[in-house]
Image (cartoon, rainbow, N blue to C red; front, side, top):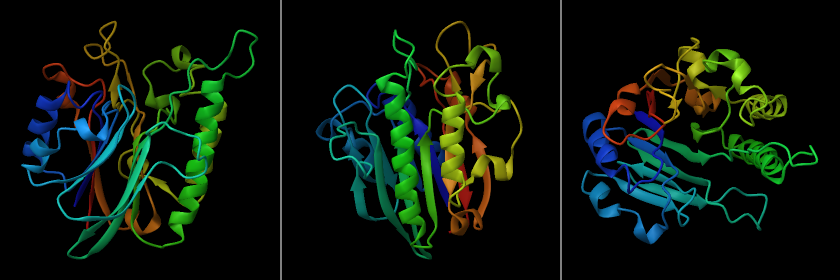
Length: 266
């Protein structure tokens, strides 16, 4: 079973790339981020024609997440629990059924958090929102782990976990994705019993999932790894490998992110 995550950076702008990749790679589940459209405008019919069930949590012009699954989805949750005032569409979760059981999958678009500081050098509202969102994700994940089922929380975490996950650690110092507070919050999520799938099966430095559109970042391989699959013990025990599909970054009008695909014996 293939479970993928991909920040498509606007589903309408990347529809050509998404359809081509889905048809070529045939993931069983695809978690999309930054679809940048309301639910009613998501190109559902084109994706359903490839054999996928579709669930979305959209937002006009910004954010937005989706789940695509070849098998039925149940118990769909839109929005991360813990703050009823949060209107940003950054989380969708569903129970995906298979002929050998079920796996719960979440598609995550974690806040960027920049700029980190306001003019008075205090932490900005955007960065505090990022840290609060991560704390809410940790709390929700604790509840999900109580089900003792395969769980994969996949998405654009906007977290660079290690120095080896960026081409330029000094250049990223102070960025919201690479600050100590962010690292502490990310480790706090892992420490409840989740596993970063990349670390379990690869772990090499220099394996990036995002390259900026500016300054020849792609051509010079100046990237960062911020797209992650976090797995419960029941999921990681059945995991068999992970792959970063870098070739999509070299396509026509590509997203600045590339798909990350985990394989499981589910």
